[in-house]
Length: 459
Image (cartoon, rainbow, N blue to C red):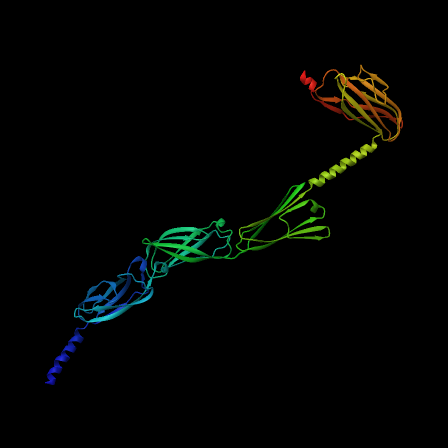
């Protein structure tokens, strides 16, 4: 009885072993990713060899993932390349490497269990952006975007922005591909920036999904201090020293200018120096500054020789006049003043100052009268020798004048005709003898400005 039961059980086991699926599964792809933002599946390339009988095989999982294809027919001893696509049916918060378990089942319900490992990432984690180094004198810069994963993004748009430039481009980006772009630079955009690392902001758009990525730009440290000097002007001399920091670091600057002890008295400085030192007859002005990138320092030294030049000219004129005055034997000065006449006539008092600088003899003083005036018959203490009304001339005479002797001659002239405007009197002339030689001296001209009187206005 026992022998009869053993035979059917062994038959069932042998039949199960013969009919169970016998597949050889090999994954030929690698580094698969699932980009959550795009809603596209992770794709695996499988090479499946059927070592058993022909069968229609079903693919399924118990993790809530959608799979494609769901089934495929593989003949006996056939090797088939399968592109297996896997994507979550609902929201999936996990990020990183994920091992996916799935099953391949035959029509007799026999099955095998396989697993696949892939990486789940957001769109922003798929890219790397960066650039080559940039220098203060750079005119262009090469930047790049790198697809770090085994995923074909196809048509891609990227907008790059930084402290140095803004730039955008359309391109295609395949699996693990890197794209380089050359950007033209304007030095004015970064001339005030310090050396260091700056952020390269990038917006990458794929299928209307945008991700923000950050990279670095290295602004290499370099000292570039450009100094220019110029000087112009003779009487007003201006010396200018200008220093411009065209580098990208704070650069120390020391400027020394020199003046002598005379020119420093007429020199103005802008800005004021940080230090002033004297060595012998020289004065040294020192400016110690720190100039930031893109900034400049202008030192202006102005020496005005106009004022000392005027003083020198004035001194020379005074010396010349003094010398000339010392050579003068006789000095005449003439002055005129308005006086009120009883009859209402226009009248002027004429005063002549006579001063002998040296001893002179036989002095003849001649004064001429302007037209339309008459001489009042009364004179001062010095009476004239003669008055010639016809020739409009008055003469005084002195036998001698001692050195330093002074005489004051006064007389009055009048006119019945009113005078308006500027009234001028001729110069007074003196003829005298000095050490046997005849000399002549003239006075200054005397002027009087006549205004309309109230009486005239009433008339």
